Image (cartoon, rainbow, N blue to C red; front, side):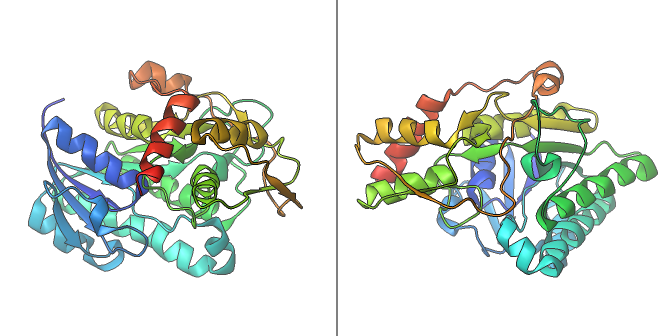
Length: 304
């Protein structure tokens, strides 16, 4: 794929900054649009042009300045708890913010790759969920992401665009904040690094599809070559929280059992994605197994 001029919304965040790094490595002209609500300026490589701005009011201005050929839209309100407590704010960022990005892209002829969520959209599953599995969000966050996906599909039909959606599994890796929803790997590791005891909610048999952030960035960039569509991005495998904690203890070299706490209301017992479509159409598959990904993550945390 030839080098392109791109805007990465949310490019100072955990996943977005890794997408920025991968784009820069390709030689792309990368611009980051981020209001630093949860992102960090230090996550952004100096080779990228940084625009401190908000997708809800600044998208058209930044797009007019940059004239991007592509946009990787990762800016989001990503905390499930916040979506429950403040569903209006969640919808403002994740739905209305996405519409404003879509309008800016339409005005300036920009193709979009939109970062969505798998687990929060599919809900409880009996087997790895394909893209056409029933969508049963259990929180406003999942509902807002699904609504944004529907807007993207509508724009594709109405304006004959070819925007793409990628639905992420449970992403982990360097730069992940432990105070945001879904960051169980970061939570475990930061507590162990501080000599504190992690908690496992419930009996720890609940499973998730843990995918390393650099694999996610690669899939996200590959999606730009697709002519529209929705693609799951995960590993296709599942790991229990108990097994995850044992793997984290191994890479950290810490012999400290976790404490168990009552299960949290509404927590899924099983969440795993079918990634066959991404393998076939995006010519992508994850390169990191869990042990390797955890080792790189621990090295980053241990380095401070």
